[in-house]
Image (cartoon, rainbow over all chains, first blue to last red; front, side, top):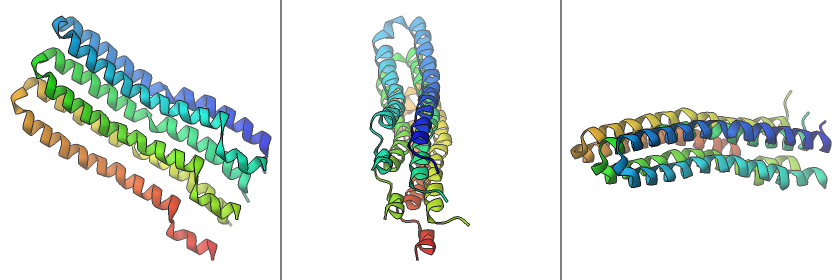
Length: 88
Length: 88
Length: 88
């Protein structure tokens, strides 16, 4: 039967690996988007305004995915609602 | 026989890894869509309005998939209906 | 012999990983469809109406696949009909 110490141990390890896995693919996606934006800028420098607007909104959307992971990990670490069942 | 502490432990670990796995492929899909939109903008800068409308509706559809995962994870963490069978 | 606590534990873990796995490939498919639609828009901007109609019907069909996963996961979490055999 795991107790409170096992719980804190597993939560910590899961938090670290969870955030590591969670930022992998958003980072790849941002790299693609930025590299393609630079390519587009070099081909059509006069379309800079629309390219940068599209890029920044897109990066914000990808960033939101990584922030979901971060929020869950911070909830796990700082205020895990499931922890109340063990401490009472 | 697992009890309440095993349940909370497994829920926490599953929540972290679940959200990490769940944002992976939406991030990749967003990266593809954004990079192809930037490519399209550099080729047809005068079609900016229709390109951006298509891109943003598409990003919202992909974002909805990630939000499904987030909703399930938050349900598991904060108000798991299956937990009532263990606490009573 | 698994009992009620094992059942709820496995249901919770399966729900989280199920929805994470279930949105992976719909996200990939949406990314493909959107990126190819943007490619088509940049090549034939005057065909915008038919391209967007085709894209949105396609995205709705892909979204329905992810919603199937979500519905099953919510049934598992909130009202699993198989649970009655254990609680009585």
